[in-house]
Amino acid sequence: MMGPTTPARDEDGNRGGEDGTLQDTARFRSWRLLLGTLATPLAWVAQMFIGEVLTTRACSLASAGRPSGPPAWAMSALIALSVGCFVLGVAGVGFAWRTVVLTRARRWHALDRRTRRAVELEWFLARVSVLSSAMFMFGLLSTDLAVIIVAPCGRW
View 1 (cartoon, helix red, strand yellow):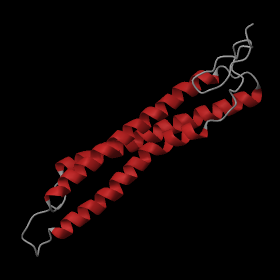
View 2 (cartoon, helix red, strand yellow):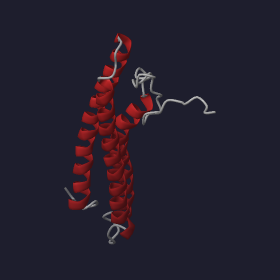
View 3 (cartoon, rainbow, N blue to C red):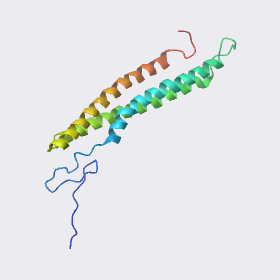
View 4 (cartoon, one colour):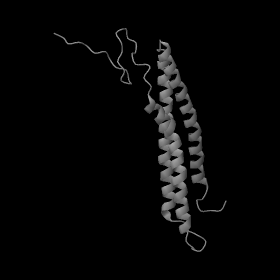
């Protein structure tokens, strides 16, 4: 004797109904939106603040009163920080884009008014997170280029 079968789940863990439609399309996925919205801006903020602290520390060790140049670890640390923040930024942009794709697909499956409204709100917020992530990714790229081109303790 076979037991009752459970409906298959989609990639978000929602169970499908007997007619194959999703029952839980109104569920708002705030964690996904939060990650897609904040990952790239936080990577940029981390790069700016940690990079400034590292540069200030390295340049204070190589001031005009001391004839030595900046420490050898300064440039390596700045490049490692830039690479790490760049990877986090790319992951944030990818996550935000994936959220847009998933919400766009779910948008057409919403049947009732309440569900459709919640899905459209999530779709709008996902698009805002992609735009925000793209702008901060441009900031990350600009800062990475500045780290490569400009000497950290040189005169402007």
